Length: 111
Length: 114
Image (tube, rainbow over all chains, first blue to last red; front, side, top):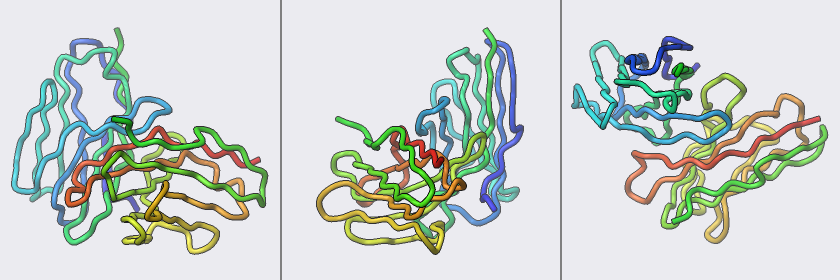
């Protein structure tokens, strides 16, 4: 089974609103990353948060990490139609090299 | 500064044929990952390779699938005797030596098995 599980599976909001996506995982991790995928394309790295960090910002993105609950959230503020995409979290279990991706949240931002 | 290049972009095979998917990592990158994605699903890890070495193939089916990353040339994901269930998008990602924290993805190969 996948390490990461995002929720919601799908999210539809109006332009200008904030979008929040959550990711849960199962094992101890070195870091957690969020990626974006536009339809039919490869994934693009958005942001990385290490296991000893609790919050990180990058432009309109804000990521939090709660290792006690094994969960992370991605907040996109002031969303734009161009933010429409699928968003995935990825985790690397301590002691391994592979990244495990979650099932993704499909975000649709309506203009 | 070419990104990760995958070819072909689309590949159509009949059942029983072989599929060869190629991935040229970013310049200077020595780590390659292969992932598989079904429609509306996440990416499933298949294999992680460094130059000339398979480091982790825990996600590879035991039969028909193989991967290599030779000293020279692209990484190859090979699927022998394809079946309809192999139809999927196959993505390659690369990362530089000494730092595999951020993966750079190619645009994928869409494999369709008729």
